[in-house]
Image (cartoon, rainbow, N blue to C red):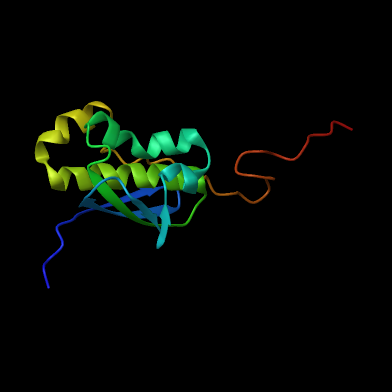
Length: 134
C-alpha cells in the first residue's frame, strides 16, 4: 500500500480542538467524517468560514489541498479558530518558507482567552447581585 503524503496540525481555541490533515488535492473538505462542498456548509456563518480558511488564502494554497478535519468541543466560533490554527500549523509542515507570512498575520499564535470561572457570591464571573440600599 502506498503511503499517503499528508501534513498534520492541531489547533485549539477556547474549548474546541481541531485536528487538521492537509493532503495534496483539489480542495475537497471533510469535517468529522462527512464530506462538504466547502467549509461554509459546516460553519454556516461566512465570517467563521473566512476566518478558518485564512491561512490558505494568505499563502495562496487555497484549492491545492484536500482538508480532513476532526473537530470537537466548544461552539462553531471556537471551532473556526481551532481549525485556523490547525491549518496554519499543517501548512508549516508542508513548507517552512510560509512561516514569515503566517507569522505576519498572527496565525501561529494560540489565542489564550478562555471563559473566566464563576465565583461564589456572584451571579457570573464578575457580575455581582444587584445592590439595594434599603
